[in-house]
Length: 216
Ligand SMILES: [Zn+2]
Ligand SMILES: [Zn+2]
Image (cartoon, rainbow, N blue to C red; front, side, top):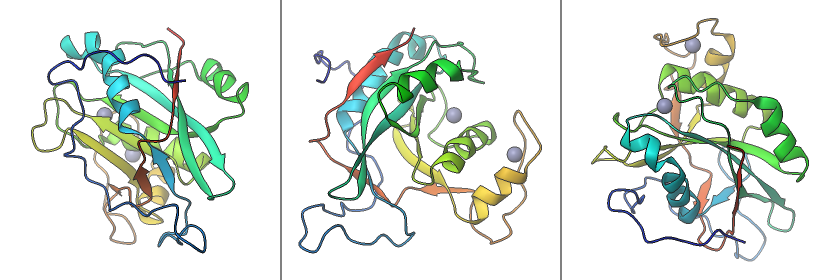
């Protein structure tokens, strides 16, 4: 069951300026289309992103980042993942989000959910993945190649919402081998690809229901 919705706050909603490829459609005869990258489709609702912004609102007002974990199920029939659970971990209140991974793993494991990525806010910055963010994403994407990073940047007038992944193989391999931590520059990838890219395998599906597990 989705949590009860509240009246949206001005500036808190992720409007339709989101950049994703056109929906791939799940009801086509002959089953789901093959994706160019050979990875499975991930479905998520805008309602989940909007709800995350509500949980993040007090941090966002203070210019502090918030982070949530995206977990979900595999729809065997359609061969796609659906993000069905938003896990809100205890927030460390720093931009370098150190999370209680055991508690998050337990929350996913006890519900037999796949770790499908993470969502975080950029309260004052534009919508992009920082060098720290690409390392966080590397952890998720190494576990499951379909995992995504959603960035919510309410102050970015051009792009308030971004769905990202590391490019494969270039970006993923580069970050997996990178020994640096904290903010740092990355060299060009061996394949000439950008380190990260917009997701081409995510389908915004308003029918995907979600619940929220609040660990705070
Ligand atoms: Zn970030
Ligand atoms: Zn690095």
